Length: 215
Image 1: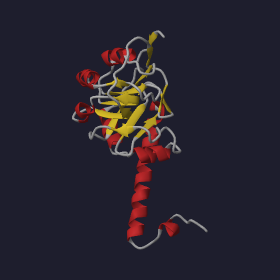
Image 2: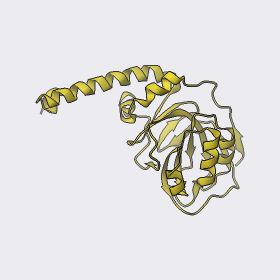
Image 3: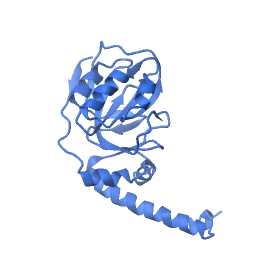
Image 4: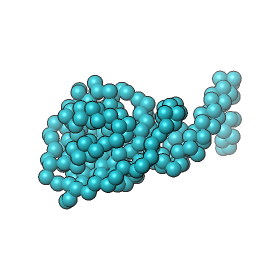
């Protein structure tokens, strides 16, 4: 399989947008996207540095192979999040300490691997956030290719290059870049509405009453 490299979209988040999205839980954003755009529970968090906010720098690689990842890291945009579609393969790690260090020095703020990683202790202590499907000592091959900056599947959820990615303790949600302003506004309204629900519960009402849940 050849290596296909596409240009990263010519757009960015402002500082104000980054700060605004850091206040939005992944669960709230998922709700406002009709419970879509969220990977399955197979992806686990391997670092403590969240909230995570950035634009998706996407990579698709062959199972158990990380040639494309080395090329992706060398081209990654500072402030981006590497979104690696490794097919969920669990026999070989495609990401480890060497690439994690290279990504950090490149300015990458997060790595998401739909596949396995290794050097977990090193990754846990890194300032770069990391989510992955699992970890295994066996390393990768470098005999195949892949695709960079294409639409990929991460935990059965599609994400395209340049989409907004947010992550926290609950997991990840992907927001189409062109929809980010409208989704942000809806998220803020939902946060305010949920705060009012909590206020009413603390005042003595039940969730059945508040949500009008008929029998």
